[in-house]
Length: 319
Length: 255
Image (cartoon, rainbow over all chains, first blue to last red):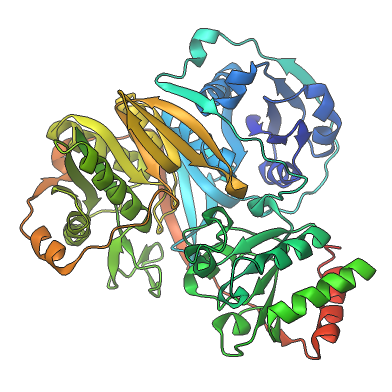
């Protein structure tokens, strides 16, 4: 039997984020019809991109600016879409936005939800995610009428599967969209041109104790700019007040899976690995050859990152 | 105001995990209060400082030894504990139902806290499920909280150091994030005092939770193995930089 799958598309200033394509690739399965839900843009403007990855229906939802900013309203919109198109599985990204949206949907519907997953089998309803600080992989059997999945950004390589899509406009009953006791006062606009999202970055350059102070992080920022990378930090750097909490990678920070993770002056505690062990390639730069990260990486340099990174910047500039 | 804090008894993140019977961990290791819950307790204590009539109740669904985590929460400032005792592991649907039932049976919440996630199951959803069951507004990854005139104004952290600000009517459910405060670690007298604070034990089965149609069941746990084989990049700073650049270009293909 044909299953209808809903995919919540995340946009950034009207543009479709690259990480959506990996999610669509993950959701694609035999005997499924893929419905993309677009809440923040004209469906027509993203149609070609979505068709390239196999979307056949695009549900366009028109919301006011206020409604767009309200995660409770957004969750209720998705519930309307689920009911209108008989959707049995919903996929969204496990980003900051997704973490505030997908659990709301699952909670309102009393549906199952697995966040931060990287493999889904819709025939057997099995899903894989990491648990215990990245030390184990859990295979979870999910049950219920509707299944909700939060997909780890960058965890799945996008694979094209050209299709042709039809745009459908969903008329919403405003009385279904009330956010009881929840009002948006202010939303912050992230300027992606200067601030690459840590969890979605292809390359991350992160600093730890070896950075010695907050000022030295500007060296990492400069290198990140050249590499189109995001800057991360270990807990030590965050606790010392050198950089904000939001830059922390690890157990109690962000969990990231970039293609390349460059660790500068980071020893590599179990808790730090919990946040970055699913990275593609790990390059460690540390003066201490015995630091645990040095035996758990792809490349290591026994040197001071404060000497290596400025050289790397020079080479990138001359490249 | 009665402030309820839902806490979880979790394995120490530094502990080695051994898998037994295919889908469980060997629980013979150190368990402690979930780190995000420490922020929740600390915040509740801060609120109580301003509203001295408040009572802070720590609630935990767990096995008998989870009482230790309730004692930690009480050492940090919770007034009493509620242990929902169960021999089984529960998914977040059952957990939220049990926490809701225990809280409703116990009192009249003005505010309910959880951590933004537990560091073992990393589900990130229990606060929303409690909110939905009690029909209360929910905010998660809260890094700033102001309680004023019957409402809560919260900053919820996004990536890149930015935050959204929401207003929630009270009562509401708050998932504490890491930037919310600096946990107030107990002194020795705090620990001694916490041993005298009351813990009420309720059996999970006495809460008569209706089984849900939906569920999440762990069928298999496997260790996540590292297969990295480190290779050294040698040379002076310039040479190393040149080699890194080549690796980024030719091998990783990110440039």
